[in-house]
Amino acid sequence: MNNRTASSWLTIDLKALAANYNLFREKVGDKCRVSGVVKANGYGLGIEKVWATLENQDCPSYYVATLDEALKLRGMTRKPIAVLGGLYRGTEDYYVHENITPVLNSLADIADWAKVAAGRSIPLPAIIHFDTAMNRLGLDSVETPQLLEDLSIIGSLQIKAIMTHFACSDDRKENGDLDDITVMQAKRFKGIAKHFPDTPKSLCNSAGVFCDSSYYMDNIRPGMALYGLNPTPHTDNPMQNVVGLKARILQVRQALKDETVGYGATYRFDKNSTTATVGLGYADGFLRSLTNKGQMFYKGEACPIVGRVSMDAVTVDITHLENKPKQGDALDVICDQQTADDLARDASTIGYEILTSLGSRYSREYV
Image 1 (cartoon, rainbow, N blue to C red):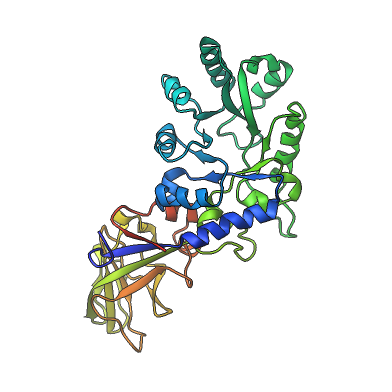
Image 2 (image 1 turned 90 degrees about the horizontal axis):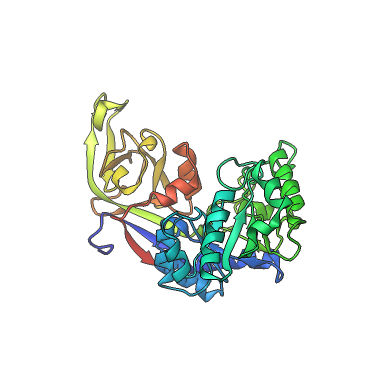
């Protein structure tokens, strides 16, 4: 598949991806390692190209969400790979044989992995995740003190790092101060870290890096911002845009006043209008919640979406354009005028969902 045969296509700027990685490296300095979070197929952009780009920047290690993702990545690199989703019981041999590091999220995980290490008489690598407010994954407020009171529990393991994960690091109060939960999480984690003086610590996700330099510690884990999403929604985006999306016009047609468009007749024209229907839809990850809101662009001019987003097609109003596009021309969906974050706002979601929903039908061009 290529841009000539596809109805819509992605342009992925690998130079911008590299620049975003290096922005983090410059921000945190030489004493802090910048890992790459490449889960969900490199946030929908293609793990092979994403990995190769980060590898060329000497990225020291990688985080993924699942064991399957880790095994695929292991076929590309021998550098450390950590699975944020933890240890899958019954699959321990994969972690051992492929030298994959589980992020241990409970005392039960720790006990299981320690048993595997003891059975093989080798200190297996692990990262311990402490839950400091997220209430999702990690040792909770009951298990954390139990471990801290008896660190012999992890004696047979090689603890590569301890970590926590921010819940609200991209939020700010009205006066610009950090969210109270962010401050509380950092304080809790720093208290836990005192029990591990010689172990690397990892606190920051993308947005956390822009909170406070004392949060950098030994290792940061940027994800979304590497791919151009804004880690500082309270201010201008410091990252370069990585993704562009274009959609081919399938048909240009006239609609009369009081006619409707699309399934359910949810939009009625208030005057004679010209529309363009383009070849993408919810089967491509273009969210149905953009029905009758959101826009596409033609030569920098906004064209509002009219009617429902359907499986393979979306219609926009081009009545106002002086120089109208024709069948076969392309409209810009994600571009300088409309980032993935902008599209997400219209869809009442977040940029993460926009990127990770990008479908397999898109042709992908890497520049």
